Amino acid sequence: MLKKNKQLAHFYDTVYRKGEQKHHTEFLFGKGKFPPDETAALSAVSWKGKTVLDVGCGTGLMAYEIARRGARRVVGIDYSKDGIELAKKIYQRKNLEYRCEDIKNHRGTYDIIVSLGTLEHIDNPLKTLKRMRGMLFQRGSLVLTSPNWLNPRGFILQTLYQLFDAPITLADIHYLTPVEYGQFAKKLGMNLNWQTFDFNWAHGPKLIKDFKRRLPNVFRDMKITNKKRQIKHFIRWIETHILPFDHTQNWSGATGLYLLTKKTS
Image (cartoon, rainbow, N blue to C red; front, side):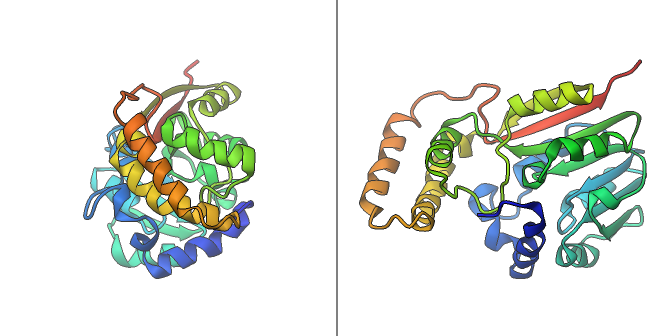
């Protein structure tokens, strides 16, 4: 399991070389569809006429869609060279540019900084958020997403992680929820609005499909073998004892969307 951000550049270069669909499997969002976090983020603010920085842009889909929605200028940065090379080939517009760059070395000021599914991979999320905040215009906003763990999926996997140090994800360094984002907002002196979504993955059929693949790998990496029968019974218990009940609280989706805005004086 990766523990430091610097290890992720090679990890994601490998992902991009193999093809993102080999890693971000289709059960997460369906063939030919936007990932749920991109769909939610695209609807969170008006992009028209804005200058936008996409931090951790990967192969460029989100940056491209923002540019297509009328942003004046969009800059996508990622420290994966392979990701940036693919972005330049696949997603091009006159108001869009890409740079292979780390956020700590970037210079510029923007109306909106968007970063989807990246903060949980960063060594010091608050330090990075402070850097982002300093790059915003007076009324600027941060649009962020992270996996959320306040749901049946999260409770189960966090139990394995917190009690047994189980490698429950391939690349996450932190496990963020609205609790952490509330603390970030207070320390940054920013206003916070948030929502969660993708309830199917948090406690629905998508969860079952995920666990059938994920749990055997988790136990394998923990060097615990011969658990196929127990895993099968456990997943069946989840289907009969968790899925039938309503878990759709405002904080219980599998992914969180967080809008941080500068306070006006």
